[in-house]
Image (cartoon, rainbow, N blue to C red):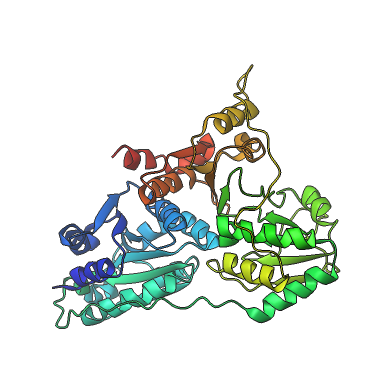
Length: 426
């Protein structure tokens, strides 16, 4: 067994069976190992941004990481925009980046660059592999880091991919506990009881079905409101779930909407911030005289933290949460407009669909018009770097092959990653 084979076998034995790949010469040992490891599946992308965006879509839908395989520093750089989106979305991803052979590094070959410096901008954890026998432990460490809701990156020199492994024992990753911050829960409960006009700002898995059901329990006993982050990466929607408005994008609208509240509780969310620094407008959409409690919930503990908050408030348990009936959309008529397109999609989308929405201006009305649509999942751009829609849809379709996936896509944003169509066709 060589180092490349050791990595792929360790990945497979730890539940990672998929790799979105755009390899080059330096990564050929890893390609051979990917093809020869039973149970491992490679999905080729013609552009690195497709691979990283697809890994984001996959990770959001499966709550577990896929691998990406990228060619040296420049190949990684080609995929950075969608890794930025994944970082903002809190998506688990493991990047494998090929590097020149250790003995060749001093020659400063044309494709040489400071990979570690580039990785640090979008990856929460990184390591350069330094010996073949440590590859298994390095991959396990990357997996444990990725499970915290971030990208983890291994830089793998070519000669160590080929090096013989003397001890190929496959290590097992440890699933770290995801504790609830009980002190924060108690502080949030006191906050809700003290301030009659409080709003919850939800992100991460607080916007899952379980999270929304818990939020509705809290609203039933406190009369609080709740919002999703402006660019919440995944929201579950449907007639049996409460509809969650997003924090408005434009500053004046956001300031007006949030300005009516006395206080806020953040759940897997940040304090709402302006997308850009608008002249004359503040950076944050909440005022300093509006106190905020952060539940300190990691991306994967939002629903459980909301459940704990509901219990702290003595909210009645409910097998089913009553929500107001919402009108169903009707197929658009008349001229073809952004609103008629959104209405038609909302009226016709099948139950359990995944909507990868990078429609930008054309889809502004979609969330409103689809409020009464059958149960569905909405994925959106996580960090504002356009060009994620088609790769996101690709990864979601790989992650959930039994569910219909609809990509609502702006033409300008599509131009960055049109190569996703090649992967989809295959």
